Length: 282
Ligand SMILES: Cc1cc2nc3c(=O)[nH]c(=O)nc-3n(C[C@H](O)[C@H](O)[C@H](O)COP(=O)(O)OP(=O)(O)OC[C@H]3O[C@@H](n4cnc5c(N)ncnc54)[C@H](O)[C@@H]3O)c2cc1C
Image 1 (cartoon, rainbow, N blue to C red):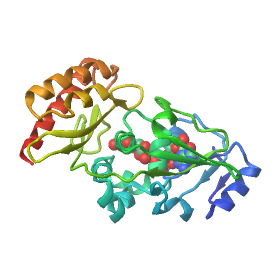
Image 2: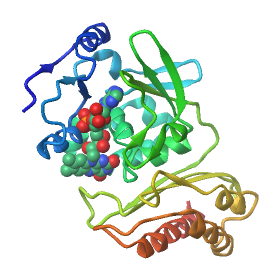
Image 3: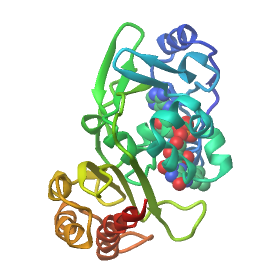
């Protein structure tokens, strides 16, 4: 049983509560935390729900990019005109995250702190060079997402710190914003492997720039700069993709689990890259 429960409506109120109950556990949508509650792994800990804090729900232009509050839900984010216009790759990932119910409750902050290798917002956030803003009542710091997440369920969040939001730098020139997720079924599926790509493709199909990342293919999101370099400056073709694919094969480090074998995941990670050939028709 968790007998102490708090529902602050502002950051000031949150800091005040945390000064009295420093060991309280924060949650937003509760879609990850409440599953753990059912497993009783966090029995008896005071809970603080941050879903009513409006300061955590902003999406706004700031110096250095667009700031997305950690408490914004996936549904709110995928309908936000600023996000749709600037970061379609994130919207593609949000559209296949969980179900409408999960998207209505779950937040981007919760997805990041959960740090699941299958977290659907993570591959796009890595490619978008997202910077996380972490605060205590008297200190603020900014950390690149790839430095913050250190393993499955592991982050560098400090004691008493709250993730207040994500700063996403302006993105220019990429005309392909791709996210694909392979699961055991079409809807409400945790990814077996996901693949995210940002590509600048010229009208004669030369790859002028490329960023690739994979989810569920290692302990954290995997990037392969070698695969990117193998394509940059080349025409997008089956031959160039085949060369790049071999770098993917050595970059991914999947595991066997109940959803798929490591071998299958590796094959899928490579094949998802090969599917970029479909953009020859775009
Ligand atoms: C049926 C089901 C299907 C799902 N499908 C998917 C899926 O397809 N893809 C996917 O990526 N995820 C999926 N999830 C996982 C989950 O919905 C997401 O990770 C969601 O984004 C979590 O957000 P939340 O606000 O609900 O997190 P919460 O459960 O509220 O919190 C999760 C963790 O983050 C911490 N936390 C939350 N916000 C903050 C903050 N601002 N600062 C500091 N710590 C914080 C909490 O303490 C907790 O440890 C699924 C979950 C369920 C139950």
